[in-house]
Image (cartoon, rainbow, N blue to C red; front, side):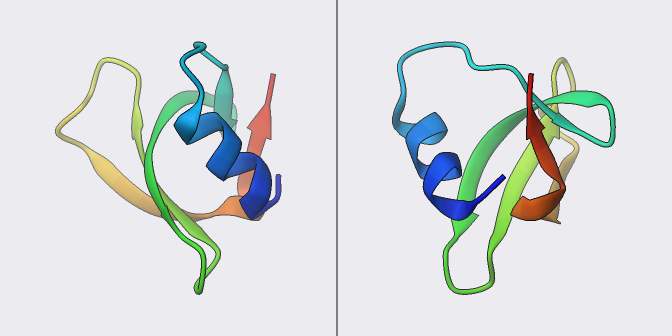
Length: 59
């Protein structure tokens, strides 16, 4: 996935399924300069991770 698609997903009112290494995640935010996104696994809001946007997939 690229940073522009991440921006579209974050601003979308739709529930767009995104996965990180096969796990369904919510994108909480992104850092355009470092090309990373802050995500949490669905159902685990307290466990946030910063991951490269290239490792996110849209399903």
